[in-house]
Image (cartoon, rainbow over all chains, first blue to last red; front, side, top):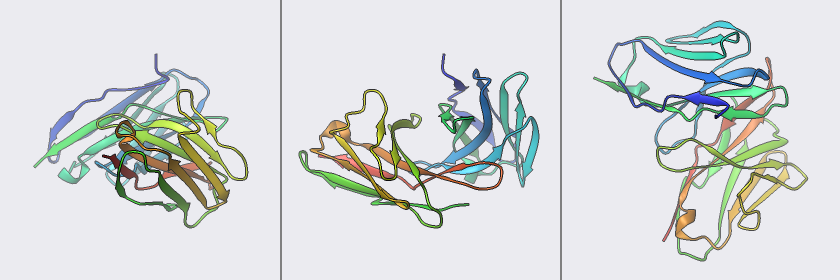
Length: 110
Length: 117
């Protein structure tokens, strides 16, 4: 079992929809959680960074962490075709070792 | 966010030649940088951890003599693919830790697409 699990998709939604991207993790030592967006043939771009349970909002993006169930989510409101990319969740332990999920490919259709 | 610059963006080379990829942290000092490899539609695979002033730490299955890593300064790490072969064709990405409020964050370069003919 991988330490961070993520549905690979692809997830296809119409423009304007609310997108929910999810990851589960198994290691209780993970302390920080991040979401990256990666366009094809580009390096990942840091979107959200959280270290506690609860919600963190930034524009159309909301990151949610539930440490009790080891579940992390990224919500995208009013999705746009430009949001089409692969979204990677990542978890960091106390030793600053980062573990990526496999990534979810999102397609937002106009 | 912090900026990590990676060059070149793409390179095509003949089999048997060596290719050097540079990764620079532009606005912060990075004692640790990471090198990843990514095949199409797959996630990032950590190849090695590059430590300034010391030898790199390679992940299991990664040939250290094949993928030479040098981290000579706090802002520059290089990956040299020696005697490249077609199976080395891949997308290589570097990243660097940036200290800051709330803990360290990891920022990525834009990646290098290597095609070995």
